[in-house]
Length: 132
Image (cartoon, rainbow, N blue to C red; front, side):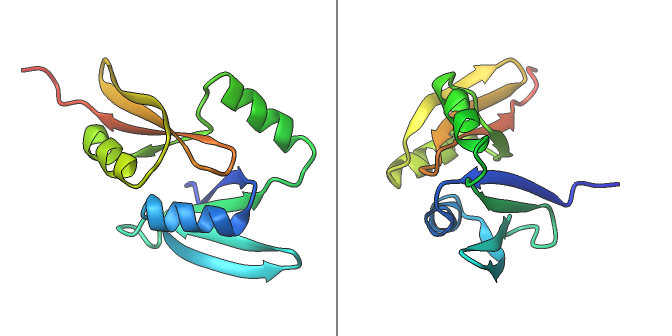
């Protein structure tokens, strides 16, 4: 068994597609029209056959209060691995991305939290080098 898909609820699929591809650097994998929405997925460019992130419409009535509660409490919806949190923070800040948490070392991991412009907080994380 392996993880094939993971979903994130977004307020606007096309805005999310732009953010997740043009800003974060993912690549569109699927865009299948389904009425007013699409089956829209992105993947990491270095793993095009890996886990797909579904940019899921936020239409279900339970989604809005759930997302709002997470954001109000500063809780990221999900986490993406990066090689260097500080470098990615600088790159994304340069592109105008808003962060709710600047890079912080937390023992074995360094994290930062960004606003995806689609109603979610996203954590980026990297493992720290072990102390010598």
